[in-house]
Amino acid sequence: MMLLQVDSTMAAPAAEQGLSVIDLLMKGGWVMLPLGLLFLGTLFLIIERFLAITANGKIEQGFVDNVKDFIQQGNLKSAESLCRNQRTAAGRIFERATGRIGYPIKDIETSIENAGQIELQRMEGNLPYLGVIAGIAPMLGFVGTISGIIRIFYDISISNDFNISTIAGGMYEKMITSGTGLIIGLIAYAGYHLLNMKIDRFALKLQMAASDFLDVLQKPVASR
Image 1: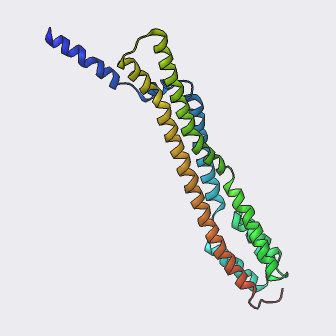
Image 2 (image 1 turned 90 degrees about the horizontal axis):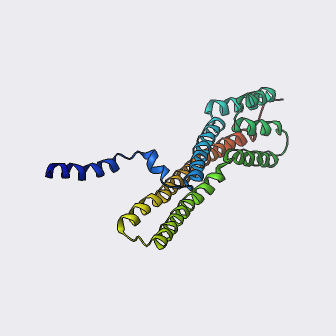
Image 3 (image 1 turned 45 degrees about the vertical axis):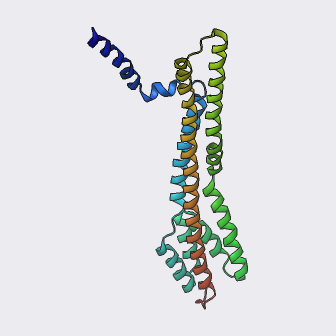
């Protein structure tokens, strides 16, 4: 009989430990639905911006050198054609700058700066939404927890059934929303700053390439 009692008492914790992640998340209540949408939105934004920044943020040294060679040879049409075929942010920027050759250097420099700002804003795209999610998700999770706690104490006031098992069971279920919100917020926060670092590295490479481009324009060139 004692062995049977021991087995029965150990079976309950084993059943609780076997709770799956999906079942655990489902206990979070209605707040898990908007949190789930925020999580999907976070993944979409991170992947979409990463691919876009990677595709548009390429600046190959061979491309810059070829553009400079064409300019030094006075072959502006080939330089513009090469820039147009790049289909990257750097290609569009240097295509505009090449088309301004013949104007004062200050005008060409301003054209590069303006085009660069436009391309950087395109790269940022929907990144601000990641910043919004990073702030909203933890707060939304906390709202779910507070709402659950209010519900627990309301039920206790109605039933007059005040015991630690009831409170603890309800508390761990409602704190799931806070934990989920914090995790989503951390993912969005990390993605936002890592992608911004990637854009900053592109901006630095662009500045160096633009400096080389402007240096070439100040040297004597062949007749055009």
